[in-house]
Image (tube, rainbow, N blue to C red; front, side, top):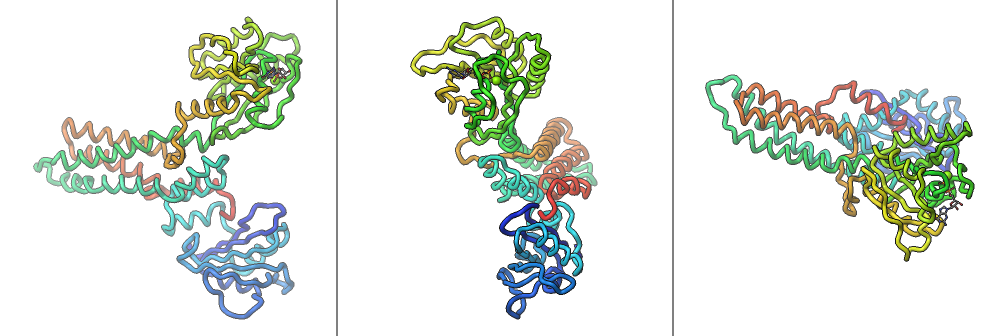
Length: 452
Ligand SMILES: Nc1nc2c(ncn2[C@@H]2O[C@H](COP(=O)(O)OP(=O)(O)O)[C@@H](O)[C@H]2O)c(=O)[nH]1
Ligand SMILES: [Mg+2]
């Protein structure tokens, strides 16, 4: 990491400001080659200077502000310079080119964050959290990402791993003296503690994953029960076309809604019925595949009409999916909805009126709670594992720790125990980045944008 990298840090397109970022040992000297401060004097850390960016031919590229952050008090722990110019394609591009001509190298995707990790400013789970902060789809998702960026997961995982390294050293020392018996308590206690921590972390992972990644929910039912109206009501936008004519929705339509903090992709479908119209037939086929890809079905019935054979057919069409039964068109909240039909995987029954908005909030929270495994997380619960990579590593750690307990309970063979504890410690180390190879780092950081 002896070279100095540069990249445009702001998104492409027009904006008020565009920022070029430099990091590395020559950040300051390169910056001074391309930036002429209005007043003389050396750059001071964490101070802003006003001046002009000058191109290789000596002409002014733009008026700009320059911020210098001296190592180690910067994002990368290296010398960092940020030049803020006008947010047009040319000012930022020409400023970047001037920096490259003056000796900087174009940064790879995620390379600034990778340097922050390699220089020990943040661990790998925090590096990944920066991407989650950028990509968060709801404020609940943002809160989970911010908490991870704050390092709670790194602290928990590091502590659990450190607690395993002590008995591991003890066992490794015993391998060379097989005649000395192992003291089981010295191993059992730390293993049980690590297992408890990892299982506690895993307990919140399914919820965390739904909050970060969202879920797919298909609206299904026979034509004209109000599926498209419900989509619009949940989105709070008139997105889908609604008419009294059965068969209005012919194709599936997907929109993301924020339901109680969960980013939910709602899929409106063509009403399922037998039809001679070839377009409607394709729509019905698409409705079936939408249902097959959904985490949850909203099976909609019309509370103002008698239950039909087509409605009954929908019960079997959704029999394999977790399903919320929705009685729509309950326009008078005082009158009770019809009794709910039998459904093998029904998780809830909700009465609502898409037209008048009754029960829509309740439907939204019921959807969110179902996706989150039955309950909404307590307000302010942000300590949730939300990254599939972390969950996979935690699951591997559990397997190794259970195997260690098994070995302890049977023959307490020191070499087996050492292998189990090493496996668990390495799995945990993958989360924080203490035990990952370069290829995995490349995969993780290549998901970032250039300039992050
Ligand atoms: N009275 C009443 N009519 C509704 C309600 N929701 C939808 N409708 C009407 O039912 C008809 C069909 O609605 P639509 O959303 O297109 O149904 P879809 O075919 O299932 O998508 C339209 O005329 C809607 O205005 C409701 O809650 N109450
Ligand atoms: Mg429709």
